[in-house]
Length: 196
Image (cartoon, rainbow, N blue to C red; front, top):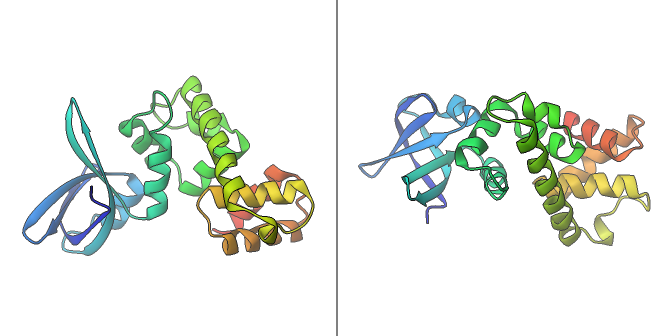
């Protein structure tokens, strides 16, 4: 219903911000990353939004980037993962680290976040890793492939599926290859690291 809302931060506390737009204060639940960038009262910002209507009521979620919102939307498609768990994940780990955990199957990184058990972490990785592969197959064609090497192309596909642009992905993979990476997981890890 709302793609984004721009306005002035009227209030910010405990993972919530109130964004004022044309005399209306929109209260949003936000991750730690969004809160850190939006907690300054009086600051003008734009937050990408997701409106959830359920039996428990109505909640509006705000995200500082479209990539954060996109990952949130992917997370809540996982069986047993609701908005609160998704927000906890986004609050407990950076988007790049979360993407790396999904691609490499690192359950330990996810279970290190409060409220995420081993079964939930495994389910998240299982369901989102598969969707990333499908998405990547639709995005990539021969022109985006760096070489005939499947490890390199798999890494490139994974980065694109995680929300990086094709250009960013190619450059990051090239940097990883220059550092001597040859296995898919290592290429992805070094590529994400090179992006900061």
